[in-house]
Length: 178
Length: 196
Image (cartoon, rainbow over the protein chains, first blue to last red):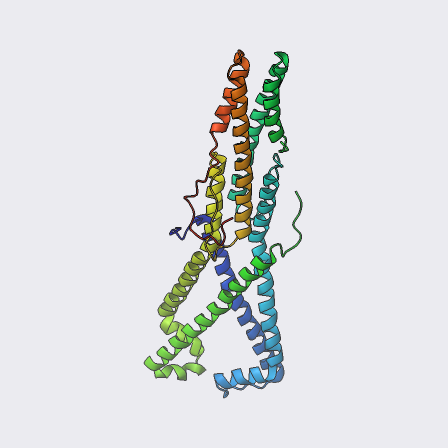
């Protein structure tokens, strides 16, 4: 069981901080919208007087400018939604690339480094995939060199049984592009 | 490196994450407004003259801020502390699987190819887990075949009077002995739904 809720401290704290920034900015944006509409109605319509209560002010504002308020609210939410969606790209993008890299390795295509974008998350996973790829590739290269030496020696001393067994090893190794 | 121009790479994941984050973004200001409203009501009940301050240079909100700034600041900080804590907890569903992937990949690099990833029901990135499991299976299968072929080779060379070949076979055996391809699945949370 994973009981530690900070499984990846660096990622989680950074991600949370960036999201809190969005959480702080969105209401600010919406308040600014309302403020600007309020200013507009005060200047252009002259509907509000000093005798009007706060609640009446809000009702007049809503009654007169409901279209604008609704439009700006929908626009704010849409812009925020798009920003959040674009933000998730920094999470989904590297995962997509890593998935491709892992599938490529599973198909035996070794020797290509996986690189992520500068601001992508999970660069540690890319490092792990590259390290695994490098280790496995080194192993297969060593095996290939040693197998070739065995085949060469078996041919020299005329040992067809050994050469055949080495050939089997070589066939397995040939499944991989090193 | 191929550029990613498409914003919706993993449509289902991104739309789900964006929706869940939007809920947080929309609920937090509501909670803040509710806080201010309750605080205003409290301040009014404590100081009925506050309503009369509408005409002064500070206005009601200004007077409220003047009188209750400490409580407002505490409420504001508590709210954001709670939101921050919630997001950290929420990101565990992302960071958790990533931690497990990293752990499994490190184990595989050390030669332990028998590990398989099992994710929790609501964890993200199930597909990457399945791909890593498929890779572990392929690598494990290859190592198994190589060990079998090496055993055959060792049998054929046992009676051979050639030290060079015997040394090479020993080298191969030593290289392959680093790898354990049998099931070593002791690191996972049990969730057969996502186990490959």
